[in-house]
Length: 431
Image (cartoon, rainbow, N blue to C red; front, top):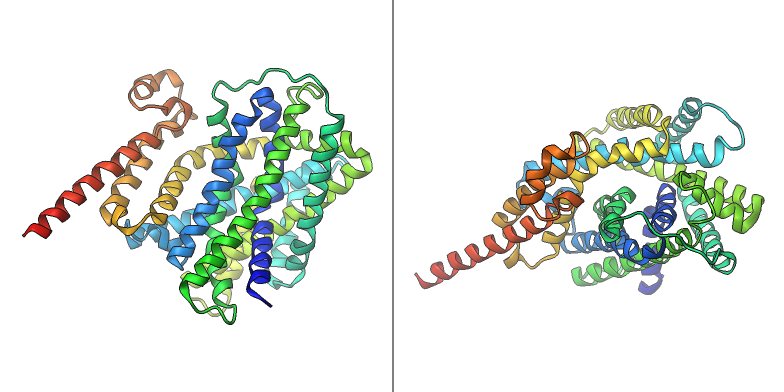
């Protein structure tokens, strides 16, 4: 197989990995709430849901390692703790959400069974697939993703011809920021940190590619292909949501909106077909995350008997059953608390790791990561305590009220530490 074909194959595989079906419910609702400001939420959403994940893949291309390597410049212990936290988050939040999306789109409308029963059956099957690790998941992912992508493109294209002429005003005060923060819920930046390591292993296993620069180029090109696919689908769904924001009730849920759009544009049969495919894609995503997490802890504990793998998969599926029985809205709202703390650290680590070494010393890493964490605490607290109690912080830290209080302090810390490092290096040279 030639290198160009290998690049596209890897790109499509990564696209399938990022194409967590649970994410499809996010863009339409963004556009629905934004109305004529859809292009502003689109810019913010694409920045956190496609650009930053691509930068994570570029960081992996440079490091040629795992997610642990992203935090090693802070300290080896921090890198390990950060990696463990990311895997735990992946198991506790996006994985159960795939079950909730499946229930709301493909089970409840047609069968009416309880969410607990659905979640239990769902994750029992996830556990069986994870333990057996058959090729079925790869087969499903390989063929499901192109089919769903094709249907979504059909919905977008056809929807533009039959969409209502009137669009009502959006509800966002700061649509650009709202779009950026909603991009956290895709977990695509976390996905970039996790899947980048898989890309490194995949490229290293290709025969005939031994040069490190060549490997880096392949990872970057493949990642770009994957992100372009997400880019086009996200844009189409956001715009489509904005075009139909006078058609459905303002209280409609995210899953309800995607289902209603597909029913309106493709008819009942088309909507049912999409629901089944989304359910299968959700299942594929859940199994992939459970397998990846179990593999990580098995390798971490150097277990050759597969006992750690089985226990980790079992615990992951147990969390899936307990959390996956709740509504998608509840899981998304709950996730905000965690993501407002973790995402700033992840973004900072991604950006620092793609910079030249002279601008990203160990001191820069430590100070900037610390600042990002401390300044994101108020963004986290506003979901727990009355906003009035945080007014002083909001007036002190720019953009803190909008959930972006970590950005300017982190940038300032980055500049100050680099100036100090430069002066220290200059003095050392003059001695």
